Length: 460
Image (cartoon, rainbow, N blue to C red; front, side, top):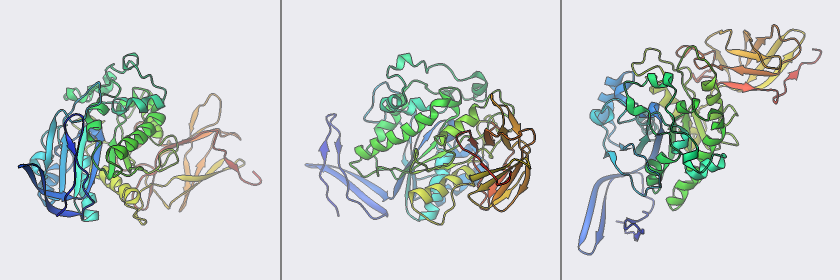
């Protein structure tokens, strides 16, 4: 039996901070004042994860591959509890949610597959389920997501100012509709075109959750920012991560750790033929232009690469691929490594660590961080820039070793200014990108410009 004091906010609501409890349950919680009391039963202690973002986070278990089996399995996981905030916006920071779409519940086929783009998030559910299977104790999942929303709507004014975005929301001009091409893929679901106005979702859907003690965050967002401030995402995303961490740590009386683990899904695919490289640029900016995470600008983070999980026949539009199992699997690997410190979990795909140019042979030799599996000799997977202004030329793979890739540089001469990999909106077919590690994780896309000097081999 534990007893804890309370304190009252100016709004009249009261708060208490419970002492740390052993994982598990069930517990009973009673709040009393004088002769009045309220009792809550069937309470479990464990780790709470917040899941946020746009429509790929909102997609429910009903909408994914093998939905029937996933829904039928729900009853096997009574110790994974789920909660969904209703979509809401506000011009001021709110203390409480205006509406709750799904109160804390035991998962059932009905509340996991309530409909299309309602509740409960498939990525969130599968991540929580996989973590429960790995950890063996209760997991709480909180969904606060809205389709068609840019990162600016989820960012506080503090975070936006950190990236030089004007504080005056009226002058930002974010309220324009999404590109009609992207919108057409969600025309059957008009509620997916969510608010674009700065900070309105932070105010109404995240700020009210700040007094929760979180173990981590899962974020699936970015499609909307291929159309809005794309090249600011390398600032707005790290700023959001840092700001959410500060806010959750402070509001939870220090119980949420300062370096709150933050996982995210790198953008999947949309169109085979794209008029620009906004998806590729956004993927790169999701890593703060460093290619892999965690890194100096995004410490304590982990990423699920999803560019190889395309779904051209998705009834929800190709921007909404239905394979969320692999997305969640890749996320939980990162969570176990970064949030839970499991040293033997491989959670990143292979990434180049060195490039040596053999000028006389017209070859570029790349050394990778892990053992490689080549699934596809795609002649356009790698491209090089050999001129100013830049004109990208294919650099076909001529050999793949255990940890090395050799590229042919026909037409480049002695000058290589930049190299890029998988730099396309639709870089490969399903699970068929060029390079993976032996655990089946894809090599992430990258672009290395003139700032990354290539080594010239002796005698070249």
